[in-house]
Length: 310
Image (cartoon, rainbow, N blue to C red; front, side):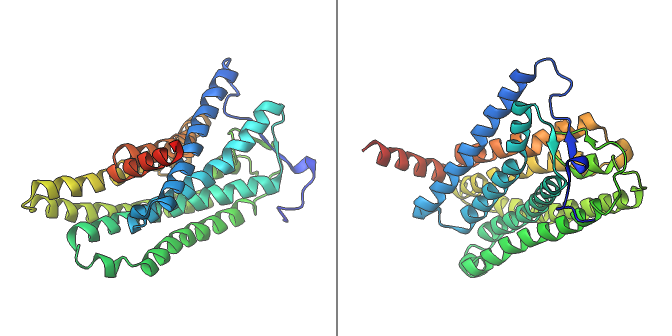
């Protein structure tokens, strides 16, 4: 099946986020406001990391990659959702649906690996500060970031290839506001249970292995911080790690609830709620966490404001 050659008869129909609410426009306005905040926050963070030389460090390089991932997933989901709501059209082409599946899965997988890389970066910075410039040189950082992206790409290629190999001969009404894998698979007229078990196993591995790296890294960091003689050193180490832990908590809170459930335990309403969490709320909160809990970012922001005020 060529997913890029389609006619209107093969288009999917996205039922949307507000299909069953009498307060559609108000809820849409809230989602649009959150999306605009996320867009502005992530773009501002990227500009700050480029403009201020003090932020040209591995930690901010990885955070900038996270911002790019957040912008990618928002750009994949929000414009189509807004266009469908405002125009009243609910159609999405098969190629457009495949693109959404590819990009959402790619970013989700890449973010798993990137958070593990960021935890390793903090572990080296706190536990091996003298070796940090050697272990976390720019070549190593770029390779680790690239590996994170490639891990997400590999996962998404498999998912798109499998999802669109199934026949869809019944209703093409996707009970969601974008093409998410479980929502699309519900429409197939073939038995997808084996593939759904495969997805579940992959999600467990892709979530738990990076989580294991994160837990191990922060266990070592905690031991190192406890043994630090200086109170100032302890505060600085905790400050640099707390932002990352908050981001990890946000991501894994939504991801575990969303993906580590059997297909039989999932519901369309639950899928829509968790999807709002990781496609809009998390991208909105991430840059706020970096800036409000980070003195270096706040200094860079104040410096930018002063330069603009001249």
